[in-house]
Length: 141
Picture 1 (cartoon, helix red, strand yellow):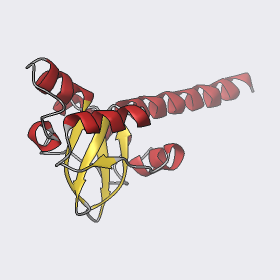
Picture 2 (cartoon, helix red, strand yellow):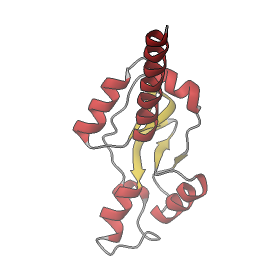
Picture 3 (cartoon, rainbow, N blue to C red):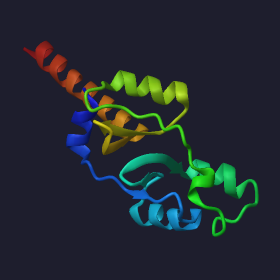
Picture 4 (cartoon, one colour):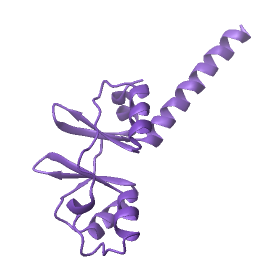
């Protein structure tokens, strides 16, 4: 299974914020959309990603103010991305080795989606269920 197949099932909607807004404003947007991370985009270019983990570690634990700190100050700058034709195993390896939970999907430098560890796990479970179903059908014949 490829990233493109995951996006076909879950959708390609991408939420983003500007790097110049406050962390608080970004968190409000994330809460409204019920997401754990949001892309930071400026002039249609991916500049970073902000996650709940970034907030917890860089604002809450350091007693900073989310209403005074700007997104670009705490976002992850070196964003690891994938392409639509990358497979699940590659995505899982990236997420595990880099200790990340979200992968923006780029095609010709354009953001076309984002996948999460939950999306990858769900896809793997669905594939395993399908394999079990086929094996069960084969054995029952």
